[in-house]
Length: 101
Image: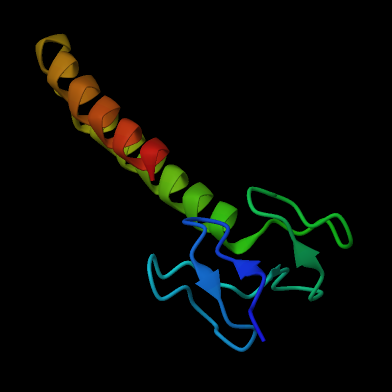
C-alpha cells in the first residue's frame, strides 16, 4: 500500500507512523496548545480554544522582553550623551536579532 502522506515542508513521502520527515526533520505531529491540548495550525500565536499564547510565541516574547530590559539598563548606565549613540546601536542590533528569531 502506498502512502499519500507528504511532508508539509519539503513534500517528501511519509509513512503514517513517522514522527519526523526523514528528509528535512519537520515534525509530522500536529502542534497542540500546551494548556488545553487543542490542535493548532502553524503560525497561530494564540489558542482559539483557551486563549493561551502558544509556546513559540511565548519564547519569542520572552527574548524580546529581555532585550528591552537590557536596553533600559544600558541607557541608565550611559554617563553622557556621547555614549548614547553606541548604546542605541548595540540595543538596535540586539532587537533585530531577537525579532528575526
